[in-house]
Image (cartoon, rainbow, N blue to C red; front, side):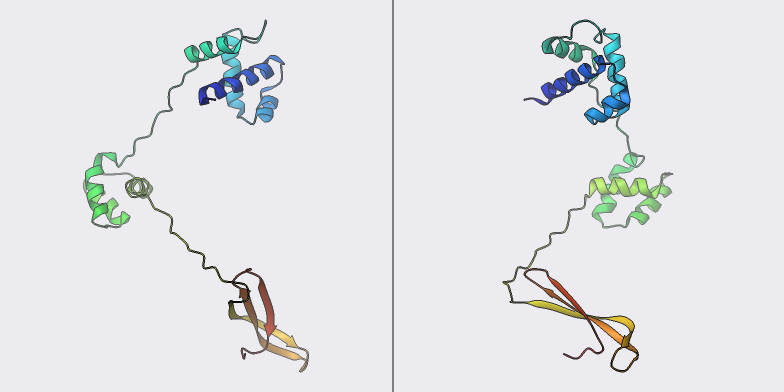
Length: 187
């Protein structure tokens, strides 16, 4: 099923709900769309007299939608850094920091923000996520241990506060964690 046909089926369902007289809020909740979208389609349906009389056939609805519903893309924002594209591209290739790039642009009359330069540089040089390799071990093959200072706790044998550490062990295969408070870091 094409994306356009799917959109028309959604419009057909939206039109069916509009014809019941439900509120925009109720329809938006039912169809999980924005109320403003429902309002826009309600106005479109009223303008084409689709809310009264027999419901239109899918083919008729498709033809009407293609003629009357705008399918234009929203206006695109143009970066304030765009006029300096060549310079910024050259500086990025030279591994110049973004703050320094902004200073160089300001020398040439740029009055935009650091964020604008940052976003523009990220479009030229998108970050790729770092690959992480999970090291697999067989059950019982490895455990990772560590100690961390846990503050003072009451020693029941001496009945006084003593420095304590948390002994932490993580089994590499199952990721099961064991924690015990100890009074020293001896093995």
